[in-house]
Length: 373
Ligand SMILES: [Zn+2]
Ligand SMILES: [Zn+2]
Image 1 (cartoon, rainbow, N blue to C red):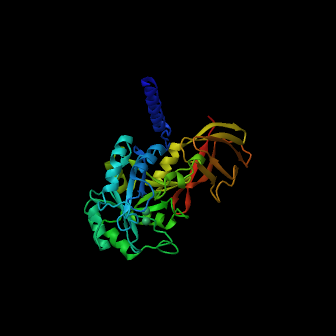
Image 2 (tube, rainbow, N blue to C red):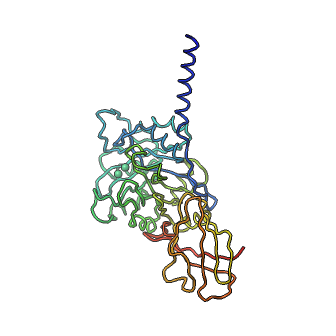
Image 3 (cartoon, rainbow, N blue to C red):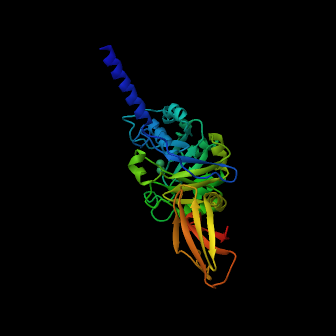
């Protein structure tokens, strides 16, 4: 009897342990750049403490299993439809509930809230403040002041959300007021929940007004309901180029616009960051020459595919692929011919990296030179 009981206990323990290990953490391979660490951060998530459909600790487990470094549970201050079932008047509670799980999983948890007002000014995330309850005020300007006075980073969410404002996203006087009063520091250029998740208007404003370029999942469902992991998809996120993997360093990097938005094989950012990412990810190997034609292998060291096409109007004396994708962690062989039929030492082509948006809606120009090894 004792033996079978202990056997039962052992198998129960084994089941528990194997359940815990069933989901191995993923690793997101995106290179570090310019002496900074590339940190993955989802700054916009919901749980049952506002209108999301999961418990806060599940957001931590999801982030851990996907290899996300940092998350923020940005519960709506003004919209909490489950209040009848989750009776909590303390707006810090989602953070407090998630905190022990975040420590155990080494996921950086950043306090956040969504200040949820009609347009203008619309929805904004406050991040890095100390007390969410101070944001519970009547006037929208007072809510922003309360966040700013706690040193918050303020992020304009989904400026192009049709439900709030049909047609293209619009900049209002209220946004100028926020900018001038140190209450606007970043903008969602990518929101994973919107059908047209990339906003060229938001990208333009980020460049015009010095705002951090942000990407968010804005998930309300369990992540696996929205993202097809088996097909290799990932949630929308922000890449933060930080001095170290810490909450403090993430804030410093975001306040200094060292970010890029990433989702669905698309990356949007400032050219200096995207060019550095391209240079660290991309390599030309095994260049050989046969009179006026060259062959080479293009290699991609990152998880982001590299989609190349010829720059229109350039490359008139050379012939090469029309359009080509260097797959994640993979390589592709290419051939380039010089149409002048000359015996040349090297060959240069001008390309556009179509899925690296360094300008609103536009891929990033790059020049590649091929010289035999
Ligand atoms: Zn919102
Ligand atoms: Zn939201």
